[in-house]
Image (cartoon, rainbow, N blue to C red; front, side, top):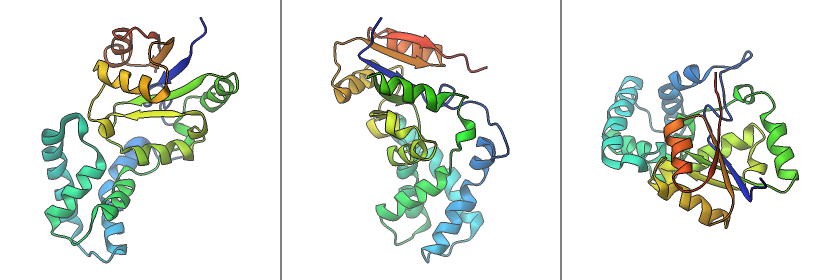
Length: 213
């Protein structure tokens, strides 16, 4: 079947287990507080590192509860700035959110991912992402740019930006509208049978299950 658009999940579908000598996802996550503390210092906001770590943990719990699917790291860092009593605005919070998110490495991609998306794009397929993620869109786009995928992913929908998450049918309809393919032949590729496969199938999309193991 010829599809009008193909959308992918991110983690576990495009990104797989860490390979090579780059830091692992767990190591990158473990450095979040240190990166935020260092950047605050560079901004002239000198805080105790332990207090920064504590504020990040506490506000993450509060923000997740308050925001639900709309939770993302930008909202978290806005809350952390408030908790710490710092005179910094949303612009600084965006920089801090990017530091908190940290890098993603090309070595984390499943082998052949860049080549596969390039080939599909060159054949005329409209490609996109629908991801359940707390990473703000600007962080996700930066990460995709860094690993060479951004030029091929024309439509990108991130749960924390749109305030809805898979398997909610609404997030798939958002993707259809953004891509201009509502009512057309759609394929979703994902590794979660409930959020990805059932969610997409429930709105009439074809699906492909990505075995991550």
